[in-house]
Amino acid sequence: MKISIIGTGYVGLVTGVCLAKLGNQVIFIDLDENKIKKIKKSRSPIYEEGLEELLKKHKKNITATTKYKQAIKETTVTIICVGTPPKKDGTPDYTNLKKAAGEIGDVLKKKKTWHLIIVKSTVLPGTTQNIIIPILEQHSGKKTGRDYGVAVNPEFLREGAAVKDFLQPDRIIYGYTDKKTRDTMRELYKNFKCPILETTTLSTAEMIKYASNAFLATKISFINEIGNICKHIGVNTYEVADGIGLDKRIGRAFLDSGIGWGGSCFPKDLDAIISYAKKINEKTRILTSVKKVNQQQPLKMIKLLKKHLPSLKDKTIGVLGLAYKPDTDDIRETRAIPIIKQLIKEKAKIKTYDPEAMNNFKKIYPQLEYCKKPSDVLEADAVLITTKWDEFTKLDYTKTKIVIDGRNIKEAKKAKIYEGVCW
Ligand code: NAD
Image 1: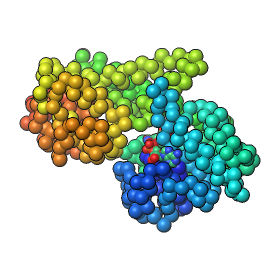
Image 2: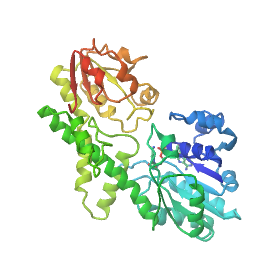
Image 3: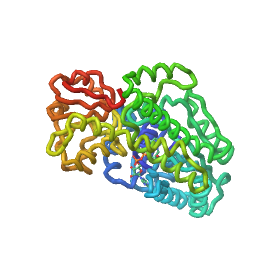
Image 4: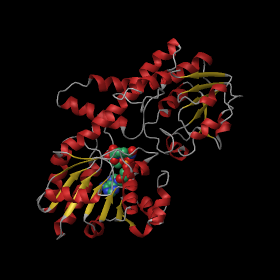
C-alpha cells in the first residue's frame, strides 16, 4: 500500500517504519524540518531500540517531506499520528489534529481517487465523529463513507519496546465508517497474527484506548499503595505482587511498586478522561485517587532521604535516571521532575546521569550537573534511583553513602545505607 504518515513522533515514526518493513511505501509528513531532514538521512530523531536500523534497511520504501499536498496525493492511506497534548484544564489540545484534518481535506478536494484517513492519535470518544469528520467534509466538499473513509485505530505501543509492540501487538482495535474502509483496514493488517477487534462505532475504539491506559495506571497506583503499607510492616511487596499476580484474573504485569507512572500517555490520558467525565457530569472517584497516589509517590523518596539527611541545603544529591522509564529518551511527566523540583527547593546540589535522556532534560533544567558516567553520581552525599535502566543494576554501590531506591535495584542494596521506597 502507499501510506502517508502525519507526525513523526514516537507513534508516527515507529508505525511508518514498521509498515515500510512490511513492504508498504511510506511518506512521512511533519512540520518539524529538522525531523524530516534526519529521516531523509535515515537517522531517527528519537531513540527507540531497533528503529534506526529498520529506517536504514528499508530506506527504499521511505520518503519524508514537510509538504502535505504531494504526500497525500501520492498515497491511498493517511495515518494521523500528531500529538494531542493536554491543555491546562486537562482536556486534549486538538490544534495539531484539526490542522492535519484541514490539510488532508484540502488535498482530497482535488483528489480524484478514494482515500482512507486513519486516526491513530489518542482522542476522546466522539472526537473523530464530531470534530475530525466535519473538518474533512468542510475542506474537501466531499462525503465521508462515500468519497473517502475514516477509521479510528488507537495505538498501544510502549515506548522503549515500540518496534516490537507495533509488529507483535496483543491486539489491533479499529472502528470504521464504511465497508470499503473496513476491507482496507483488514488488508493493512492482514499479516498480523494477533486478535483484531472491529468495533461497532468510532467512539468505542476511542474509548478502548482511554480505558486501557486508565486501568494500567490504576494497577500501578494500587500496588504502590499496597507497597507503602508493606514497607511499614516489613513485608516484601514484590513477593505480594508475585502472589496476587498468579491469579489469572489479576495477572503479574504492572504490579511492580515504585515511584509511579509518567510518560506522555498515562498522565495526559487520565486527565483527559477525568475532565471529560466532569463535563458530562459523571464522577471519577477511582481515577481521581489513582492520580493523587501518583502525585504523592515520588515525594516519598524525599521523605525517606530526609530521615537520613534532615537538611538538604548544599548537600550533593545524585539522581540516577531522568527518562520516565528505561530504554527511552522521553522525559515527559517523568517522576524525576517532581523529585528534582523539591531538591532544588531545598537548595540541594544535584548531579545526575541518564544514558539517553540528558539532552532532553538539559533543555528544562540546564543548572544541574550532568555526569559522563553513572559511577560519578554514586559519589554524592546520597543517591536517588528514579529510572530502572539496566546499567544501573550493574554498578558498584558498596561505597555509596546513602541510596534511596525508587525502582527496586538489587545491587543498590549493598550501599552503606539503603532504603527502598516501598520495601
Ligand atoms: P510526539 O509529540 O512524539 O510526536 C508528534 C509529532 O507530530 C511531532 O513530530 C510534531 O512535530 C508532529 N506534528 C504536530 N502537528 C503536526 C501537523 N499539523 N502536521 C504534521 N506534523 C505535526 O507524539 P507521540 O508520542 O508520537 O504521540 C502521538 C499520538 O499518539 C498522541 O495522541 C499520543 O497520545 C498517542 N500515543 C502515544 C504513545 C506513546 O507511547 N508516545 C502511545 C500510544 C498513543
